Amino acid sequence: MNRDTLVFDLIDKELDRQEHGLELIASENFVSKQVMEAAGSVLTNKYAEGLPGKRYYGGCQVVDEIENIAIERAKKLFGAAWVNVQPHSGAQANAAVMLAVIQPGDKILGFDLSHGGHLTHGSPVNFSGKLYQPLFYGVKKEDGLIDYAKLEEVALAEKPKLIICGASAYSREWDYAFIRKVADQIGALVLADISHPAGFIAKGLLTNPLPHCHIVTTTTHKTLRGPRGGMIMMGKDFENPWGLKTPKGETRMMSNLLDMAVFPGTQGGPLEHIIAAKAIAFGEALTDEYGNYIKQVGANAQAMAKAFVAKGYGIISGGTDNHLMLIDLRNKNITGKLAENALEKADITVNKNMVPFDDKSPFVTSGFRVGTAAITSRGFKETEMAEIVDLIDEVLMNAENEQVLSSVKTKVQALVSRFPLYK
Ligand code: PLP
Image 1 (tube, protein in one colour):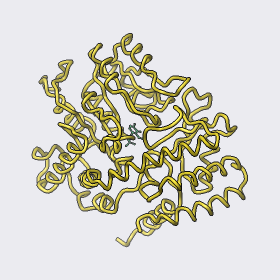
Image 2 (cartoon, rainbow, N blue to C red):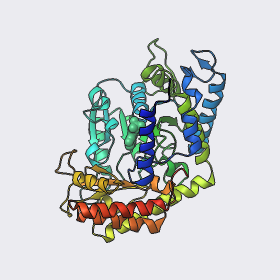
Image 3 (cartoon, rainbow, N blue to C red):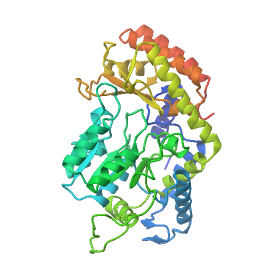
Image 4 (cartoon, helix red, strand yellow):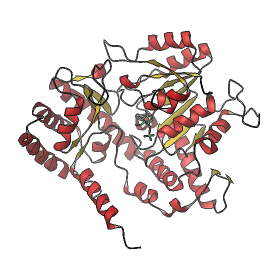
């Protein structure tokens, strides 16, 4: 077959978009060339249902070695005793955990989506809210910080089987030890979903939940800067507390139940090309170079938050401990939707986001979320953060003025051209 130029021309167009835009979506990053090379390798041809050394297909010797490297590197990176690197995504990692540890109809307690939580933590439009009985905690209105008293109150009153911590749009540290203490009072398991701050946790810049939470999930493509994918970890293995049985009636260790919940529970064959890319990304994350990178991500987020505050923007919780922040537009007379659209016209990519206690719908919203993981991979430093906030402010103050948007776009081009991507 001839080269499919229709698709490849579009891929070139996307490269051009990424190269010439200012990427501020908090969940995105730019992987290294070697991570991309592995993701586009011949490993995509291989079926390997099962685990290394226990496959349902022949010819798995090479992929066994690769998957074992990914597992060992992930263990080292997070100090985990057990890891499954096969989940195709963060959502599937969470689905597998719930399949393994709770039964349909059981109560789960998660962080409210409209306060910064994730769909898979109990939203009614997601499997987690449809199959299980979701309960929520949120942030306090006065300071935007997690309402731990409410979390405890709901947990003690409702006795959920699973408490989930972690978020998509929360910029602060978590008190995992407190949540575990609450869970122990009611015999609940704790799942920490560290998809966003994983890179900070790997390098010891934020608290590692593994010693506190029974199970930890993460995506591999956000601050961790790997390929799109998911992963499940435990600090130590344990016998499942509710005597859950396999379909054959056997009681198993949690690691076994989780492995079985990934495959055959929620997935078929693992994506060995992506697992190889994960292995490479974990190898990169183990280096000091990545340590410097993630420190710079944090420094850039601090600088960006300071610049937003200086321009009179509200930040939920007043600042950030990680790579992201939620900008509150309620005092700026502009919606998140209009902000996102206007910024896009100037080649600045953000996502509109509800703010806690928002009176606007998720399609309109009163805020937007920004993160520094991707721009830091390009080499941006603190000085550029102030420049970026100036550009954002110029757009938002002139959101319907096409001339201004076009002039900001030119300034964005000039800024990003100083930091070439994939040179
Ligand atoms: N968990 C959290 C906290 C997330 O922020 C996300 C994605 O943004 C996910 C899970 C889902 O990851 P995926 O998109 O890979 O399914």
